Image 1 (cartoon, rainbow, N blue to C red):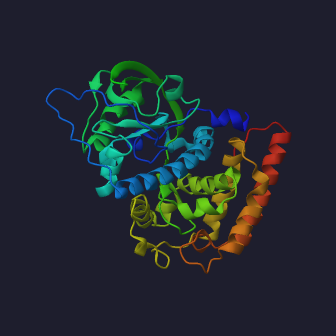
Image 2: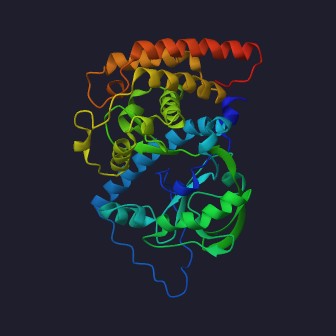
Image 3: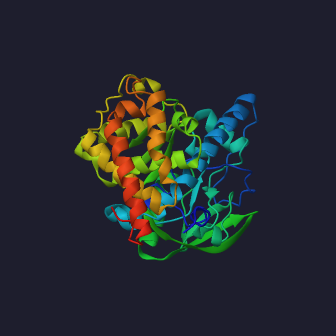
Length: 359
């Protein structure tokens, strides 16, 4: 399967975190009328501070969008390898103004046009949501006839509505509002690895896996030179989740708290001083993740030949002495690159013999 085809494949976020991550934010459609008795607050006057906050949200959204697109084929084409982590997923994300704190709340409302209803913020090309006709800016009204929550708690409550439907059905009957008019859509679901994909809003050059989430920092996204290199990072991190390494190393809670912190618009960077409390990954676990990552990459049609050179270049730029960098958390470079080279040779041999790409 070609990479272009994979880029257009169905992509989603696990139901429990379906609407949690930042996504590309463009002009929104006019809001549909709210339920009887509910009054929308007036939009505040736009200030320079709101405009600056909106620009920050937009920059973060662009990085998250790229991260989604690179991660999509890794999650989709490796569903059969994820076993315990595979779920029925959807192909869109959504937010409302209350997703953002303080001044960012007002900016989302006044500048980006977000209100009480959850509005679609990202639809990937070729996804079930895209094929159903869902668009950025659509407001989520109901699912299978059940009204969807609005207001400050909408994001926390909507999973309880979507979850049972997506678990039991092959598609999601969705009522949306667009341009002040309601319409019904049927959004197909797909089977994929149900790892949440998060952007870390920090400049340290790292990636984190807490068992259920994959986080790549802004600093790491600035280091990688192309989508293949970003895929190397995501696949290695994803492999640690699939293998349960955070739990076996008793790092899950520590890494989870770092992910919780770095997903904030204004994180507490003091948590990143030193090692951040994360124990370095032992070489025997790291090489198992590296081997699995090469298979994940190959199945997703990424260029595996560059993986070893990438990690060598990374370690030369950010050696293990740079605290809270990826090398500090994964110091066994020689063992890792030897494993990667061997795995690349294995994959090539399997391809030439038409054998399945299973590790």
